[in-house]
Length: 506
Ligand code: AMP
Ligand code: MG
Image 1 (cartoon, rainbow, N blue to C red):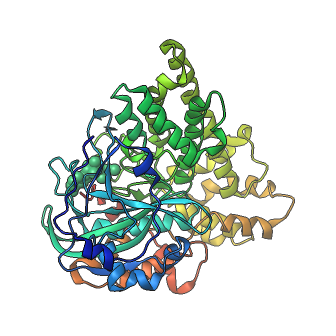
Image 2: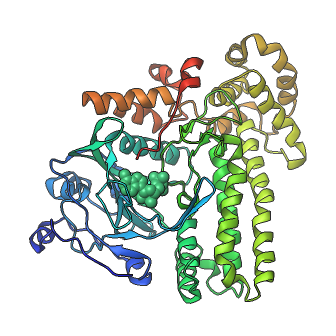
Image 3: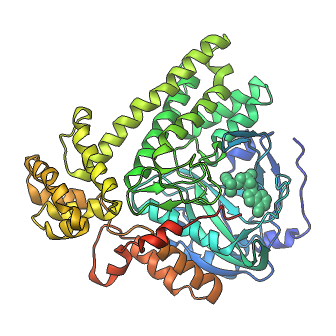
């Protein structure tokens, strides 16, 4: 692939003035042919709206320097640090089941990789940084609202213990973006274990160049599954490992009521991190059919469909890897299929573990799953808030039944027989211990849709970041119930939730 440089905005002078960031760029080095070198378009009047200081420190960056004019220039795409090698990654993807051969970073650029304080290699990328050769009909921009939304959702997921990309910063560019209406533009600086996607493999597989495919697979193994490097069947094992990590990820999502909303293969990582917070949402009333995305008219990415869709996406990964799995295509298909079929079992193991922790039942085995499922059925039948359903059960572990009974309201008598059986299953360690461990996995605060919208409206329409910062602060300690934050634990009125729709944020 040619590597044109769009160098209109950035002379050497800008580089010299730029912030020092010790990038080491393995993707640019090892994966020539998988990207186009490109530069950010720049922002006319940038303002730093949010800086993730603890993440900056984790990356070995000085938060004060990042917040300074030099740092802001990088975060706004107005300066490229000397060691950065900005590039737009190429990838394909199945979107809502249909194959798009040419997606790629249409509004994002990888700046480079930093080795963090724990020696982990992390991508640092800009999202909303202008057109690239992959922009197709898009403008290469991001609106500020979705940028702040991705920031908030990613941080909330991280604190909930769910593997995810994270936001380093959110910048208002000072430019406007045309959507249904004219909106302020933003740039998110995103940190990821890598941006390798199932769609990256699909992109290479379509070229039918086995050497290139092997290069990508070896790179993915070295970066994310180094223990496999010397295994004779490492490509099949790569697939199996991604199957397991995705099964774990989806189980963890579902344990907090998270609906990704756009599980296209280009939005599924090889690392097992959650990526691309577009039309995602947290469910309130428990309903496996819950969908919020305005474009998901068929419910393809509904809450309860997520395991099946993950498995479907992994079948696309298996197809892409097939030439490396076995030189005989029939055998390759059989072995790849078997690995993908394992998803069901892997998901069941991880989901049982999630339920075990949420219900405070350390001895819950797959064979007792019916008991756990009964609780989910009670939540569903009586339209109970998923988050509070588990949190109030946690209170009941130490005898505080009243909040749980109040939550079920008229349906409390229907739930009590289950509650009595649950009590008899108390772990040997005792009630207090049960409550403590349950509290660590059953948040009281999640990003509730109406709260998120209110915070974004204040930030975008009224230039008031206070509600956003308040919500973020609450979400940063989701397990600790404090009286002044009670409003953040409250579900939206059900009519509001029924009307709630999310958008892709493009
Ligand atoms: P997403 O649904 O956000 O994961 O994006 C799917 C594809 O569309 C990716 O290739 C994006 O880079 C591209 N894309 C999304 N929004 C824009 C935009 N405003 N301008 C250019 N490309 C975009
Ligand atoms: Mg995407």
